[in-house]
Image (cartoon, rainbow, N blue to C red):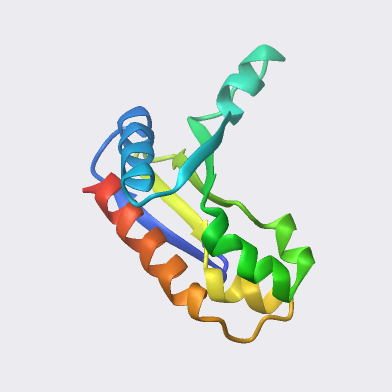
Length: 130
């Protein structure tokens, strides 16, 4: 079950290919990749097993800064991030927080950049998944 605040997109590709495609999709939209956190690799390092699970962190200061000017605490949730994970059935999913929910969580009711952010996340994840 996915919480209301999260958006899930099914991918036709395995986790590695999905992540590679996601990196291309976000950079093509003018966002910079800042980090890749491979949770499964971290688990292996301590002798544990975790299905493929990784987070791509990326953003664009032109989009994020106006939100941080409205509420500095949104910096806890920026830059943006997308989780690429393999579920029990072997299928790959991309998961991200709904930007409107994230903004509301920090007291931002409406901002024009939220619409652009939501569209960029939706199109980048759709491109990575297709």
